[in-house]
Image (cartoon, rainbow, N blue to C red):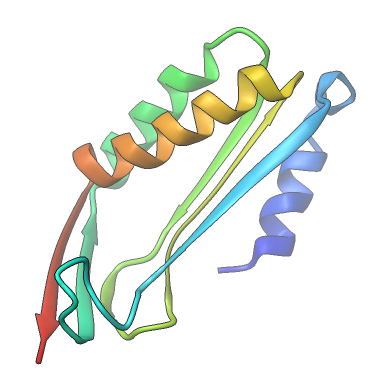
Length: 118
């Protein structure tokens, strides 16, 4: 995962001058889950085709210029990255809701995870 390369791709978009912001999200493996259990590893299996379909759908929203998605896979340890996404758009009121929906839909529709806890 190279956040700088992803940002370079976003900034190279031919319509980037129409954007007023680029919002990013970097999801990491936590050392504990929401039940308070210690997480030793997280197995992640993304559905890249579904994630791309979600990206293309949200790219059609008014005011959105570009969306980039990078998903990690395999057995990950706490502190390792799971998801890196960026949304470029005209204004905050257009970008924030799309970023939130993108994250939630990828987690729900395009990713399988299995925690190992102690």
